[in-house]
Image (cartoon, rainbow, N blue to C red; front, top):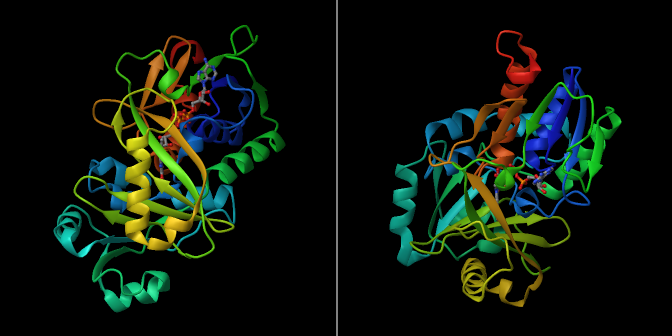
Length: 324
Ligand SMILES: Cc1cc2nc3c(=O)[nH]c(=O)nc-3n(C[C@H](O)[C@H](O)[C@H](O)COP(=O)(O)OP(=O)(O)OC[C@H]3O[C@@H](n4cnc5c(N)ncnc54)[C@H](O)[C@@H]3O)c2cc1C
């Protein structure tokens, strides 16, 4: 089967992987001139289905709990399985109770437990929640490695094209994220910072709860941290606003004052593609399928959705449109 995948975000790359692994001849067409610059590039890379259940529906946990294994098998060495720590400032401890009541897969920590897990946070938080089953990866490293792996499998990448006019495909998989022609999609803008400081070390993503400005900090290589992220109902991908910058920087400094001396390596925004229920969907198109609506959960849910998409395209009873 010759398949054209449109879009080289995490949805397109994971779909290409599942299809190529099952023997399809895959071409990926990406409008941008190179990998990145999309929502996936801005992501934190948290594989955190238990934490996300705080505001997400049960399918996010059901579909997402296998994500770390998928990434680990496909890209060995890229997944860090050190769990997630959730803390709150003393005046916001009620937020921790609320978070705990809406989630599972955690255990309560006291001040000393927090210091054992994250020595640099010693003395800063009296209580916390630890989600030991969670993991994270660096989305940019993962996407670059997945691209290379796909090329090695024979997948043909075409950049700076929308794929129109490329001949000979039996079937298309539309993974264009917020750019897809789907009136049911909305954009949820997420602004983020990449900070660098040698003065703080964290071994895992840390979520700082706050009634209005929750923040997470994801450690990356070479003293870098990804601080995120705003949630704004907008499909505007423009530069980070002053207000959002203040919120993110304020949250970072509340987590640890040494972030005040960090350098801001990057301030960026991505637009999360979302349906009304904030769950991803596979939809039938005249000439194939669309995989979209990953909202906050692209890295978490794309592997499961890619497998489902491959099941559909390779199952003669389920084949759709021109793929039949
Ligand atoms: C700040 C932020 C933090 C996040 N943190 C996390 C996290 O920690 N964990 C997690 O799981 N998820 C996270 N997400 C969510 C995740 O990033 C998204 O759900 C995911 O990136 C959506 O992937 P996608 O491939 O559908 O879209 P995109 O990554 O936007 O990719 C779509 C691609 O299609 C291309 N395209 C558009 N039009 C065309 C065309 N006509 N032809 C060809 N190509 C086209 C675009 O150029 C783009 O490259 C975060 C998102 C943001 C913004």
